[in-house]
Length: 468
Image (cartoon, rainbow, N blue to C red; front, side):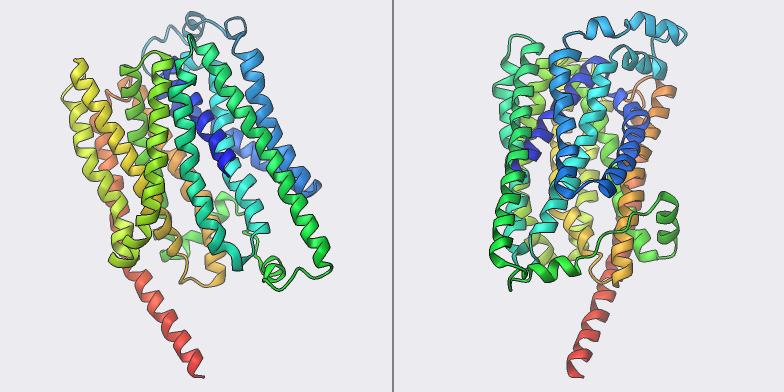
């Protein structure tokens, strides 16, 4: 998992550097709607088809290798020849009716930098596929339930340590190159090594498993591995329509979906505005890259710390406090962030203050999400019956996650067309941001009562069962 997260962090920082410095942070909203969403949908359909045709190990390599092949191809051929294979900005603007401001101007920049936009889309898909499909699917297949408590906390720590290393590699080595092309070479070298190590460790892990199974013979031992693999339930794949229908029939699941949707929308609003401010202060790609590298390291270090303390916060203060902490933190830190923007960004001092307030806001929002939001959201499924637990999670993964990201991007896209830039639309963004947080906190508060009630009912039923 270390190398998967390492490659994810490096490509994430690089894609943001390419798109934000060349097209502006507003382009992210357009790319997520018209690039990432259809590409992800096509990938899911293609992956499902491959999964029915290929053996699991072959499927892993066929999924992993093309991503890293593209990253190498981008470095070796696409980026060095970008000037000859991309249209000029003037031509793109003229094609769109002389667009120089607003949404059409953003589209023109994307067209004239389509190679960077393509890298953004591929890197976004890799970020979703690498952890959810490549790692967790393998881990859940091979780690028996009896050993999950031993290995899963280690996996979580690797998720925090990898960004620390990746961020410092970017800040202290890649961004210190004499030009961006050399920096890209250094980043791609690290990404390529990560890809090789991912495939190597996957091969070695399977070789070890084969040797172990051969020694055990027909039985898989007495550690519960066989039972875990036989009894393991696969998560059903629901369409958007099926997801909406299932959630509509269950208020408890609708409230969980509101939590997931609330985080997806709110973090989307503040993150794009923050990246616009960072681009204003660090217009040079290497400076921007260095800043984002240091930020990735801070997120990694904070994650390692808060994952440990988050468990104790929930245990001592309860589910309600844990669930409400993330929206409250985002709401409180959003006040100085938006205040800095409203006061104006006409001086370097004000711009620098807004950037650092936004950095703190983004950092604490992400870390509170990892430490408290994710655990409490997953805990909310525990009191449910098996059908609601399995189908509900699948439905929320489809609707909550997709609508959060795509909905936030769609709203920002409309605001860019109306106001010209996301920073000019800050007052409207602030109103929507706090409306979403209020709805999210209200849903968490209502869900808390239902969660506690269902937990007590389950305890009572277990107690009665033991008496009988």
